[in-house]
Length: 313
Ligand SMILES: NC(=O)c1ccc[n+]([C@@H]2O[C@H](COP(=O)([O-])OP(=O)(O)OC[C@H]3O[C@@H](n4cnc5c(N)ncnc54)[C@H](O)[C@@H]3O)[C@@H](O)[C@H]2O)c1
Image (tube, rainbow, N blue to C red; front, side, top):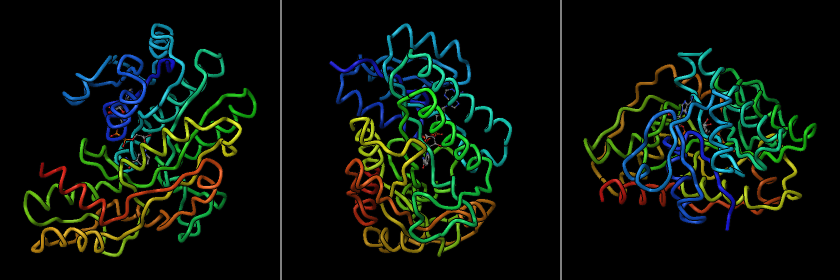
């Protein structure tokens, strides 16, 4: 039997699907979902849930001790677009929640931590194509600064205190079970909803903005596969580059038009364009592939087919 797992931020876009998948794999009672708010009905009914503020160390510690938690997946964060509006709140949430979990691991109250980073750790001076694992990182957003600092702290806690922390730099994630939570790649989810509801979409990024993206099933598989890998295979303790597909809004519209021929897209770039322009357009994830066997399954057309089928269903 797998030891108990705690997911913090379980009601968000990734946390919801991660909770379902881990419950499927390890049994509902072994996976404690927690968040500062309640989630979807399906999530709330699927197993144990705790209301929990990730920035409150003693509250997190209480839940960890109560359920004898072994592994924590920390998914609570303020995402890129929202963080530009509330810089100090974003820094406070993104950093303090991470310190709380890393410190619980340092004190041996938990044995393993998953914490996600993002392609937002890169900045305008990073090579844009096939961005390497190790390269210039000068993030220009509050969110990116918090993720880059988080990566440095993860590596530090691993080296200094032997904390078993594992991380991937997720690209933009596309999913249908939960709406995205205020990121720069949210258009790639909204577009499917609007395509089905209105037959058209006004995109907040320009037509040729190419960004790395991934279908949620691939992201969840990568996450669990990294956590299941033997510790000695995990050579990168900051965060792994992780790639699925790359496309522009224009290419995405074409892919949707294969299912909805009259679909129309228009463009009205807003403040998120500048954020997107500072990020890579494609990612070299060879370290993840070599070290723990990562391989994506979904391309853009498969993603469109899955999204439209499930949202229509
Ligand atoms: N979705 C993406 O495309 C993407 C891409 C790269 C990285 N990430 C990272 O993955 C993680 C999860 O992202 P997501 O898309 O699921 O985000 P989300 O915004 O959908 O979910 C975050 C969840 O955290 C919860 N939360 C906020 N403050 C909290 C607090 N103080 N205590 C407990 N819970 C709190 C929110 O209620 C929400 O349910 C984040 O670290 C994010 O930076 C996401």
